[in-house]
Image (cartoon, rainbow, N blue to C red):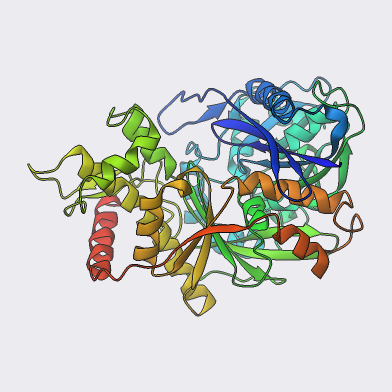
Length: 502
């Protein structure tokens, strides 16, 4: 039997899954790694610690499945997207810790570029906004702040990559320096229409072309393993997508208007908009959904930087709960948040506000406020943020979305899903398996290796049917008929306004 290995390299850990072609998970393993916070607003990872987590997670997943690496027919990779690395081509050693997507150290650079009038050009060429979230300014920071890095990059001695690029480099023993089109679309360096590196953006951010990887499709035979401890040499790496695009594919959102939200460290809403890019008029991003053969699909995206991380803060920062899973029962112990709002802008606000200077805010506290009210306000704050994104998306698409598929760890919280349906006024559909990010990577690998269709060819109806069967829906949440939605939304928008006032 041909099996698939999905490597899901996330912000706080790596999960590897062994799956069959019917979508059944046979084995899984998650390995966490350390987060580094050298200064306020800075977030870093150690690349070697990430790599060791990939090895351990893959070995654990194979052991859990009771199979060895010879059974793996193809590998799919999905990854935290904008996180930025630079390494030496000759040795593979990184020149600095990875700068994580959450990192805000380049906020002043983005402000300067906006003040100089570059925002419209950036959006037109890349579909993105000038924000430290994206890789381009992180890469420029590394070249400017690591001694000698810029000269070495211009001489071709250094390689830049997002995490997908780094993993392929390591999995192939340095044979491949590539990134897939979805990850490239998050760098602020790729042209959204040509799907190539954009000379004007390289000049704007002062990035030498010599440091960049080759852009490849999301499903294709991209490289082969060599020297990877858990697998034999020659296993094809056949699927790559950034985590949110992988989740869109893994949720079988193949038609225009299909949407999903992933609730992880942050919350990310993507909607399939078809074969042509569409500029958002409401603070959303235009991004690549995937490329298979010469078939390209685009998506609108909205990102809330803090979602599950808000629950982690209640656990680790305040000690309100001993484990994240306890948040639901604590929140259910009260009927409402009693006017308490928590705006979890702990690293600024993403779409549709794009306010790097906004900070977290709790408002509406009284002597009667308890830990349970704060717990419920936290879940509601996550749902409110996602509703902001959905409302903006409906405005851009010309009609409100009727339904949304969900995944990620926090999607298992029934209260959060019920509140999401209520506040957004749509049906929330939850699949049987919440790890659709990894599932999407496995599905792309099946397509790219030819297990679903001819390698390098666009998806056909039969391929879509086979892929869709890997993502069955288990439960739906309909909007409740509680009449306080408008008041709740008004209170939320007032709280957001306060969080943005400094």
